[in-house]
Image (cartoon, rainbow, N blue to C red; front, side, top):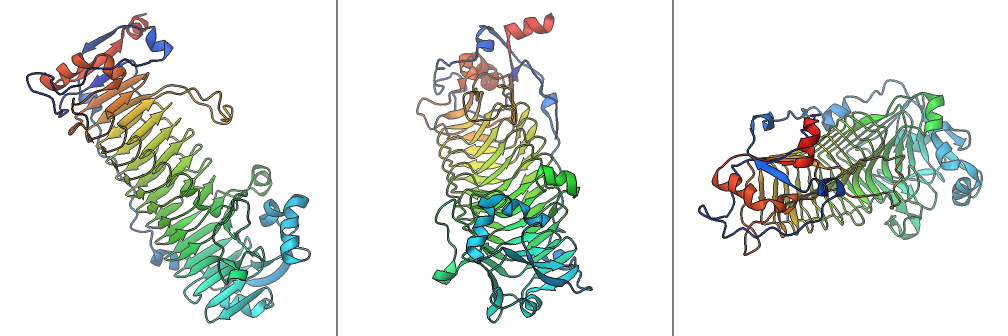
Length: 524
């Protein structure tokens, strides 16, 4: 997926089907003035000529086979041969809990909720299910309140050599908000054919979201763990506190990771439903995790949010909608070498799908991204990504937006009926924002290739490209302009629109646009 950018040119290939006259350009709106960056203003003039198209050919990318990631395969992984041990222990000095009790302020949360020195239920050295757990833990801490319904008033920790299975024997596991209950996996956790809910005892109902800082139960799996969730429903988890977002898979914090030397966590989540979560899914320094065939609905900040230095992920066949504050799906900060395909993301408050902060070498393919409240697919400061065969429809702003990102390849995508531009590429200076440039460096450059597909009926036109390092288009259909005056290009393309369209429409040839200044540099 990592292809070198061809720099110094803007080429568009004929084969673009425009609603322009075959004998003239009556339907083509005159180009409008555009503002360009200083480095391109200095070039002042461009040459326009045809170019060969063969270098733009690219084989259809191969998607990973996800047929083996099933509930049945998860069930086969459970090892029940060795009964586990149950104990109640103080939360202090436990590696798996240090992130939540370090310092007086964090400790106070559980002192108040437990009315004493905080403690947790530990599953160690073998296998345990909730029916066995209920027999061994005092009822004031963990009880079966009705057949198959369990209430925990303490955190439950799966130890490094522990295996906890929450299966169909459990109709529902309720984690008490008042008691400060949550789940931490430091070994192996299996959640199958069941339901886990953050529970507000005073309401005898789910701990539905009220405010970002209000504690709600959560699930966290640390470095070295395996987490498997299948055919289950998880609801009303998470709040705005580190590692407490909802369902989180995370390597230990840097200082602890150096000491513990645990490998990156992994696992699968398949065929499950997540709702009313602060984040539906979050991961940090996680490898080869599979998120397949799930529904993320009506979550608060994000539906699916892989983060820092996670890699080799598969995010496939999910449906994500109704996210209230931000994006449906986002990968951010060096989430590399991953696959995002066959997902549906719609009716989210901001974008449907975001690639962010130096996340590179990813394949985004065959997703349906529609009716989101800003852009469809957004790429921020993330080079060397391939978008193939996505359908980006009826989003309120741009269909596909690319900012400060080079070598972005858009193949066989459809961007249709979006409020603004079908494909919008631009640069932006972020130095006066709250962005930490040292942590998230970037170059204010944009380059992209658009091959095949269709850009149709977008409110501001098919394409707008501002100050590009290079742009190439080939075989792009641009039908049904929303403006009565017809198709118009904006940005750099608009400056030489008549010449471009003459080659593009009449002569059916590729178009190569070179800044004269860059040609001089190449000769020197």
